[in-house]
Image (cartoon, rainbow, N blue to C red; front, side, top):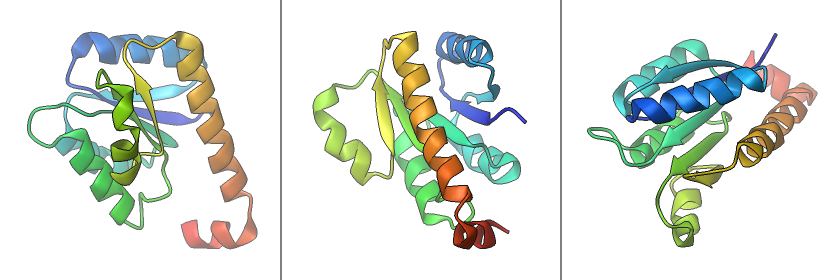
Length: 136
């Protein structure tokens, strides 16, 4: 089955663009416009990876990432920050619980490489017998 990727971005154009790219890469996706719903959708669908905007009204990307990494059901899901914020704050992204980041605008190849790198880590993690027992 194709990996499911959750896109969380309040900008409709950005959501549509990422959905289109993920379709080209042969991934399934769910796209939602806010951090509040991201928490519920992640718990329900358990996506393989999350592309998460930082600056959103209401619950922002930092809050969502922190919650996901503190929750045992979602902590292992890679969360990639997708933001127009300056790259010099990368330590802040990592400290907040993001596994990586992409700076908008990004090249399609960068998106593909970042996703593939993190999904290969997830597949490797899930193939370890002790990790299979944890997820069961």
